[in-house]
Each structure stands twice: as C-alpha cells, then as structure tokens.
Length: 69
Image 1 (cartoon, rainbow, N blue to C red):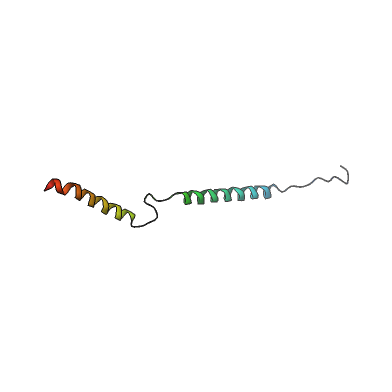
Image 2: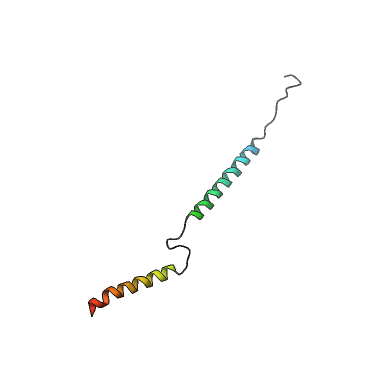
C-alpha cells in the first residue's frame, strides 16, 4: 500500500452502542406514547364509578318501585 492510503481501523463497538441507544430511545418513546394513549374507561375522575353506580341504583329504583307497589 502506498503511504497516502493507510488502512483505517474502525471501532464497531461504537456503532453497536449507538444503535442500541437509538433502539432504547425508540422503545422508551413507544412505551410513553402507549401509556399516554391508554385512558381509563370512566375518564380521569376517581369518583366516576361511584357516581355511575349511584345513578344506576336510582334509575332501577324509579323503574322497579312502582311495579312493586
């Protein structure tokens, strides 16, 4: 080989590390997006289930009590 063109030594571990970091960031972003997209059935209000249950009981009482009397 001539003095002008020397063989270059390439550190492949650096490329592997960069690729692994990119994959990890992609997975973390996908996990965060999935968590943000997942919303509870009744919304974010903690007492929504209680209110819904109470509403069902009141409606059932309005329908069933006149039939029993």
